[in-house]
Image (cartoon, rainbow, N blue to C red; front, side):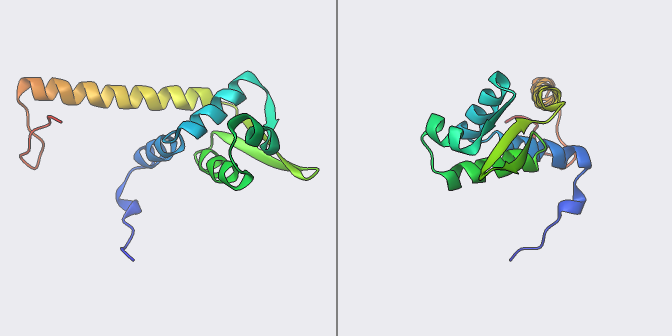
Length: 123
């Protein structure tokens, strides 16, 4: 198993990666959109809405929860899911970070600037 080099990255980069991973699947985007419409939902309701198994829903919820976008609470044989306060703001910050990084790369590429390792900043 390869060694982890997670300590080489800033907190900001790690948080950006977590949020990116959380929204890297259409089902997780749909779950988040459902939570934008409702204060909370249950895992069994999500299985019916998205036509996915409970275990698949659970895996998607774990990714969103790991990124701090949702919270889950067990209640009467089901899982209650709600958005964390500030989740929309974190998602907007994520979008802005990515947008700014892409614009910076495009600008540098346009100017013909190169990275510290001598490679072009173009895609």
